[in-house]
Each structure stands twice: as structure tokens, then as C-alpha cells.
Image (cartoon, rainbow, N blue to C red; front, side, top):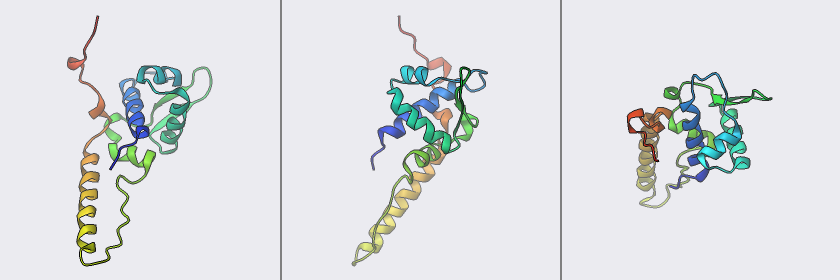
Length: 137
């Protein structure tokens, strides 16, 4: 299994939006791209997918921007992965041969356990507690 760069970027930008949850202002693409070091044109594509997946909202215009559609503790990691990349593990086992059924069963168990573990994490998991924030001079 390989986690795509797109999923990493989506998690980073969602964590950034979670930091400003409750703030009246919306976040702008340029600001998000700069602070998370993501190419702005690629970030726009990711933000569109997150919007279409119901995880964020957007508004156009001078006062426009992006914000979370739900509270950070309501957005689970497996939702983010599903919106961006589809299924966490895509299984295409035939189950043929003497060992085929057991091999398929083991991989199905792994996929189920991974999905369950990812369901335990929310966007809040990506936020650094205030006491752990490091400042550099």
C-alpha cells in the first residue's frame, strides 16, 4: 500500500483549515499553498475534490475562500482517503488455486483492520497541541 502525495496534501490542508475553524474569515488558496508548501494550482484541484466530497465549503469573490464543512472531530481519516483516492486498499484477488481463498481472506482482514484504524483518527489528530508548538528565533 502506498499513500499518495495527494492524500498527504489533502490532510495537510485540512489540518490547516481545522486550525482556523470557528474563525469568521475563510482561508485563501494562496495562503494555504504557501503555509503548507503545496503548489497552488495542484491545491486547487485537491480543494475541489474535498468540496465535492462534502468535507469543505467554498465561497467565491473577494471575501471568498475555503473552510471545513464540519467540525474537525467529525471528519475521519478514512473519509479523506476515500474522497481523494477511493478505497484504502483495492482488492482484486480471484481466490483461485489451493491457496487463493486464504490469501484473499488475509488481505480482506488487513483491509478491514486498516479501515477500522483509520476510522479512529479525525482531523483533530493532525493538530499539534498548543503546549507542543515550537517557536524558532
